[in-house]
Image 1: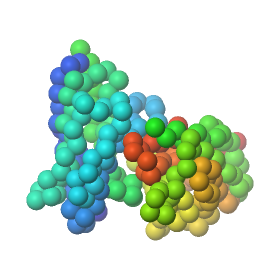
Image 2: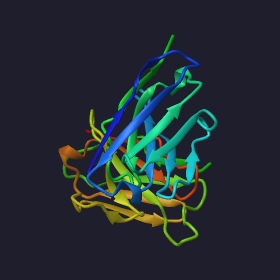
Image 3: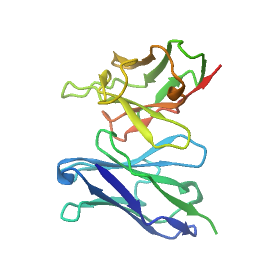
Length: 112
Length: 112
């Protein structure tokens, strides 16, 4: 099992970014997937989840600003981040449904 | 939203000592399907989170059996029987019974 995130970077407040998580080594379409973040020096913060049937849930802090999606034909999970705030600065991880496998994470920095 | 309260926030232990970490939920984590979706993870310094225990008490493959989980409803416990140096880091409980899913704030296990 391998999960590889990409798309992070430095972005100004109010701007947008799209993260990707490329999955391999398992039947991606059969598993729910999470996005989880960790601000520098802080604890884990759950962001969003998409089930194998594309049911979606979001943390209150990102609802209406972030969008999780998946493309099973590409074995890829996405997170569209809009209206970014400084408090969204964190390492963003994708993780398989039972939190048994994690990607290495991608840094998102929101700063002017 | 479900609040998970972990205690203690910091735990000092000697090698070989047995320790326990508590995770209390603001509401029952028993899902209507009969499962209780409470996991325990360990994040060693500079490393990715690692799943230790899922569904309250099931040991993840490859995890040493000195780790055990117990509990039901709103009260859960992770026990480490005989701490080893590799066990140092931050332990998190996480629930996925009720959306939005949530993490505890973490318990840092350090050497006394």
